[in-house]
Length: 279
Image (cartoon, rainbow, N blue to C red; front, side, top):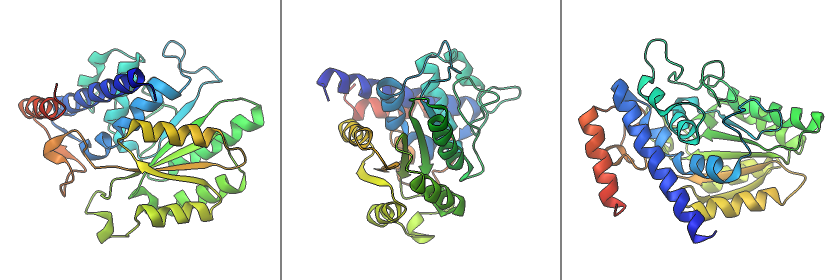
């Protein structure tokens, strides 16, 4: 990846993180952990990979992203606002009465959201269906989906995986946010599934599989480019991530699925992030 593009993506990811932290602080609490862990892949998709138009968010031949782990909505909203889908001032309305930015993503409320999610597993099934529908319609577009490792304990994920593999949906790229945590605990204490085990499982369903550092833009770019060059299989990119990456007070700690954040605490966290990144 060109150094200019790499630095631009790093800047976008930083901007998304800052907006996500402030967005959650405006409400006082929210799903910080699973939102922050997918910030880098969101920056890559919306500012490098996806064919989308904020002025025409429903164009038929657009690439689509289904965030099946719908509680990561705050990071998705921050990304969409930065991309220009709606005014950034809306971010301060997260989860409040009459908002267009509910806790979990909702396609009936928010411009740029391609499918409503929240009941874990259902979003991924929709992504598989969207990819199949595009093929039937002859639409040359890519479907992306992000699922969680806790979410992967849902049987519906594996029903969709089986169908997607059987149908050889080669314009479908899924990302597994393998941050090692879920609502109650670390995944290793509930249903262990490390990157190697998950890779073997997805391969057994007939998917083209990659396992990478989910915070490394060059690794993400290499995996996506490789996936797009291979026909005849759906693609799974396992993102090895750190839950709450960038919100330093919550990084990797137990109980970071949803956390209270004050406005003062948000600014302190942003300052700490700036210092760590040498800004």
